[in-house]
Image (cartoon, rainbow, N blue to C red; front, side, top):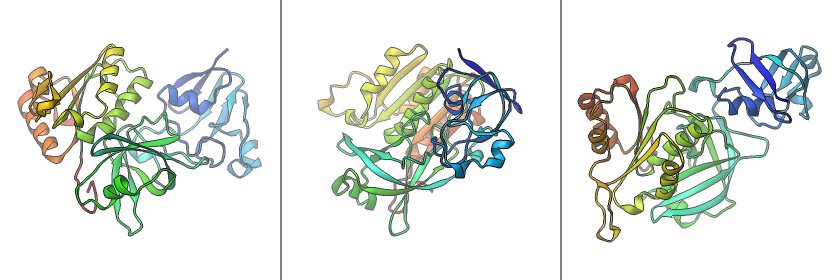
Length: 342
């Protein structure tokens, strides 16, 4: 039998199935409790059990003192309810609530998604997790002090590894290393999460997701997070690339659209190659949005890609389609020699 947990300060409630932890159940219900390691080592998820009975599970003594136990505290990543509970815990509901961490990571997987796009899967230490919002990015810290910024392409619910989509930049110091000399099991240092580009959970407005090239990465995280939350908001993904190879996870997006009611996918190529045999939409990707949605006054738009695409979309969708300025959210990729974002 499941048990109902109520957060005292907010009144938010969620159910915990037998054997599940309070933290996992809260995150699955879309309630952002703070956490760090998820295995009882760091104490970031510490909160107080106001009423009810819990099995506190296995945890490090350094993360939860005897004095704290006496006051009713528990580590919610380990604790399992034995009855209905009332708990006292901070909730993470904004970028400012999430701590920025510096962590080592091991390259667990490398896969060429396109001639100029590499998937990197970074494995975090067993004792650490990176809490982030769908759409945020991390900085890779290079040995010479420079940084390279990449959006996280997986949803926050699958945080054992971080997925990055790295586009090769001609003359780029780090991306050349990725494509020519990096090997699986190499070690990297990262810092994050960063950025105010993330999927907002409030409201029920239909969502337009507008991606250019590897701007698909944070959009992928948003889509997977929305699916995990079982969101009922209609979502339409517009993904623009120069040619067919640029839609490097085209089949994944097609599968989303085929298997999810209320989700649509519109791929758009600006310069399809003769050999592409492209039967679909062509031109500028934001123009396809304008053609399909001449009135965006009741929508939210999340756009990610090159600066020129972002600025054109912002100007045309707000000025030409009635999109409210406060409903346009964007992340602009700037590919430079020293940083991929300001």
